[in-house]
Every structure is written in structure tokens, then in C-alpha cells.
Image (cartoon, rainbow, N blue to C red; front, side, top):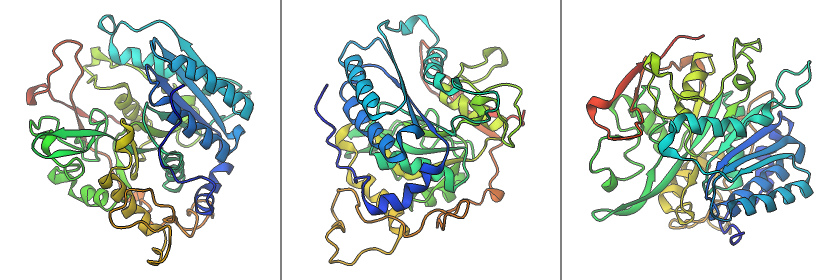
Length: 408
């Protein structure tokens, strides 16, 4: 396997981490699902992240499911080694490698990706007794990204404290511009939609690479309220997101309604229903649509959770500062003599900025930044740019506006 993960992450053994996230051990089990292809560079980081997560939550509270196919690099070998590590640690896991490569020119991309994601979900449906309601409480999907274990825990934590059906961070790539230099650029603009149904940044901006990757988010006039929350590092409600890592309520996948009844069908990853003229943008956006139509409509964006597609971007100063703005509200900042307090220009992760109380769910304590869902309404319509196998060019006239359907 490649060299060990070198991300400078806050250790999960710290008292502050224990105080904030210990309540997660009493929740239902989490299925951690990944789809990989040719990810030898990032896999050591992912493996380290997943192992730390399982050890913190308890091996019986996590099931790791990975499906990989057609990787010509050392990804399959790394997965085999990781399987042995998980076995020794007592962590349940389902790790599958298929040597066949996908001929993308011969398949519908969204439908094929849906097949791969559903394979990763298969442990969700095993070992269910006749009396079972929800075997797993949460499905945590992680892309081929660099992240710290605390990012993963924070998504799980926010799903509990916000009583949310889905929580996402944000994923970034490097922005490289001759005019304005480098910086972070939000990546998953295919899936994420605000509660006004708009993309988080323009899909048609020819100068996009020269714009500040954080200041441009939520720039639509209708989204100014959400822009202010985002820039302050405050959690905010969304229509949809994926963004490299997402914690999803497991009930829709198990055919359970939001009030605990039996649904008429189960949610699965799927392609677009083209005969109904459904916009085919991403299987991940369609999951959000299917959640909403079943009343699983509490989606939350967590700005201080970040994942990146390049290792050296994770500790980029603007991203770290955004996380700091959120973390500063978690307790009184330390004195200037605190050896763990970061300097103004430090890009190291905060070690001290954790809450002094636990979240206010089931009597667990107090959470400052709580979303009042009674005042949240979804969009009437959502913009979409369909994916085309050939000639996939986006223009104003290729944009589709879909009405948000009623609850099934």
C-alpha cells in the first residue's frame, strides 16, 4: 500500500472529542459505504479514517462496505490488507473487488453508478429478523476523498442534533487560475441545491475559475440568507447535497416511512425515468428527490465539515478559517497563553474548539446552532442540467426546471 495517511487530524482520544461525540455510541449502527476505482493514492487515508471511526464508535456499531471494480492500480491489494485489519479489529465488513472494467461508452452512466452504489448497500438488508424495524440507523457514503475522522463524526453528530434525514459537508478541488492564483473550488455542483432550488454556484460562469471559491457560493439573490449562514460557518437547510460525504437516514432504504410505518416501496439508487422526462443529472440528486417525495425532507449542509480531492488542499487557510468560525461558537476561546490555540495565520486543525456541552437531543444537553424545522419549506421547483453521454455541454437552453412533486 502507499505511504501512511499524512493528514494532520485532531486525535479522537482527546477529552473534547469524547465530550462532543460520545452520545453517538448509543445510537443505532452505521453502514459506511464506499465505491472505489483506481484510488491507491487516497485509500490509506480512507482506511485510517474508517478504522479510527470504528474504534471510536465501537466495532459493533459500524459495518464497512466497499465495492471496487476494474482498478489497474494497487487499490484491490490495499482493500485486501484493510479487510484483514478490520477482521483483527472485530469490525464487520463486506469488501468486494470485481476485476471487470466498466465500458462507460456502452452504458448509461447514472444507471451504472446506481448499480455500484446499490451493491455497497447490500449489507443493509442482511441479518434482519422478522421483528426488526431498522437494523442500521444511518448510511454513511464516502467518496474517494481526503478527510479527518472528526469530519465523519461531525456529520453523524449533526444528523442527531438537527433531527435531520441527511447531512453533508462540502467537497473541494483546487482552483487554478492564471488571473487569481490557486484556492479551493466547491466541486459537487451537479447535486447540491439550496432551498430555493438553485445551484450553489453558477453552472454557466465562463470566469468561474478566477472567482473566490467560497465567496461565490449562495450568490443568487434568493439565497442571501443562506449565504450569510454559510460564511459564518453555520449549519443550514438544503434541498439536496452529496458533496463527497453524506450521512443518510437508513429508513427509506429499508421501506420504512418517516412515522415508522411500512412504505409502499424501498428507495434505491436509480437512473432517471426518461419516459416521464425526468432530468438525469446524477443518481445522488435522484436520491434526494426520492427522499423528499417520501417526506424525508430535513437536509442539512454543515459548512465546517470539508473533504478534498487533493491531500494538500485539506488544510488550505480559507477552509480552515471557515471551520474555525463554526468551532469558535462551541465554547469560549482560550486565552492567548493556551499552547493549543492557533495563531492568526495558522492552517493547523483546531485542537481546543469543541463545545462544553453535548447536543440537546433526548436530554443530552445544549446545541447552539439548531435549525427550527417548523419554519423551513422546500422549493417549488429545482434547476437541473441533464447529463448526456455525447455532447454534454451546458447552456441556458439546456437547463431543465423540475417541479418538486408531492409526498407519495
